[in-house]
Image 1 (cartoon, rainbow, N blue to C red):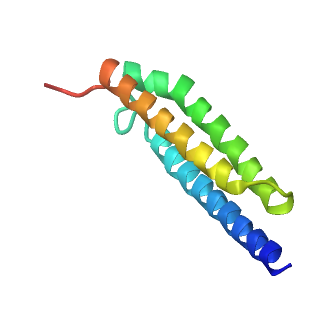
Image 2 (cartoon, rainbow, N blue to C red):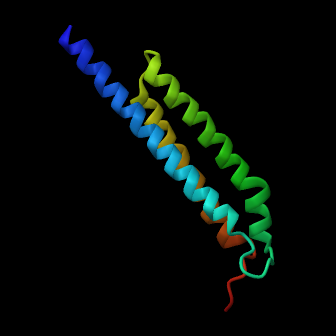
Length: 110
């Protein structure tokens, strides 16, 4: 009985950690997205692509995982697997983001 309660506490802590991480990453990427075109309003090819394609994909993934972590607090799920999947998808997103920032014109001078 103690082991079941202990596992429930650990799962709840992992789910809350996942919630905190999704909130922080969502806030940071929202700040990043809101600074597109600052200070002169010029949008580069990468900025337009990021605003129209990459950020909506990130927002969708972050929202899905936010809901999954909320549900894993109340339902018997394995939030550790959800957290690992979230980290894997965020690393893939960062690699894709880095690839496009290098290959699209992003306003970096020579």
